[in-house]
Length: 346
Image (tube, rainbow, N blue to C red; front, side):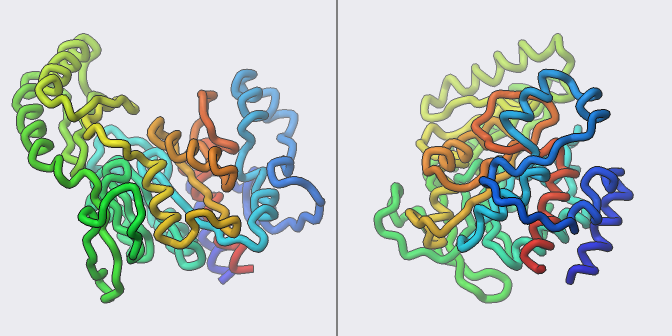
């Protein structure tokens, strides 16, 4: 098992050029320091510190690298069940110009699959659940699409959750194992289809706009829209939205999103999955949530409020966040997941 991860990581390092900083030899070093989880931070080299932007260096002191803090995080996990939550775009794959081409690398798929063999693992994305599954193609992972409004999770017999049982549907996966589909915004689907049709027609004259159907929300991508056309595009989006008072607009990375106005987000999805996994109020669980988007802050907030786990932001620039630790980009997310899988296998 360990040899397999060594080969995987060496291949990864050749792709991204990070062996010197976070390579296999670094991961193999044993540590016996007695420290608190978030205090286990290895110093950067002087050259790295001199090259780093001063604001980012200061930000890193508040949100240290999860790679350098790894041993402390694992020390906090002793005697507890680790549960992994992952965003997709910008976390498991780089942000790309064409949303339909946000393909997951084989190395990342292998790493997520290995982690999921040992720990309950869920991907919580703003995309539709089916679309994320088509990218990831791992049956051992739970999926929550549309910012958590469409969850495929473990079978549940919950009777007291925030939403009624009518939003639950029992189903079987490809192996015949039971699972549960939870869709708290199911009643909004007819209106979502209406909005989608109007949005496509109303913005068809704006070059570069891409309307994406994400199941229980609609994404209006404007990455390829000329700056002069953004104002008219936003007005058209708001004009359509004005006819649907039960929906609201949120903003992401070069995207406007139309979502049902229900009290449900990625934080609720995280809490729901922990609940169905049997860790509603358990002190024996250590959730780790890795994400890069503003919408992931809702999940970070849940972990901070509960006082358990590690919210990890994926960002190469300083930004306001509730995360405790950080990773620069998907290549570092891959590094972290490989290291996590090696840790449990050894």
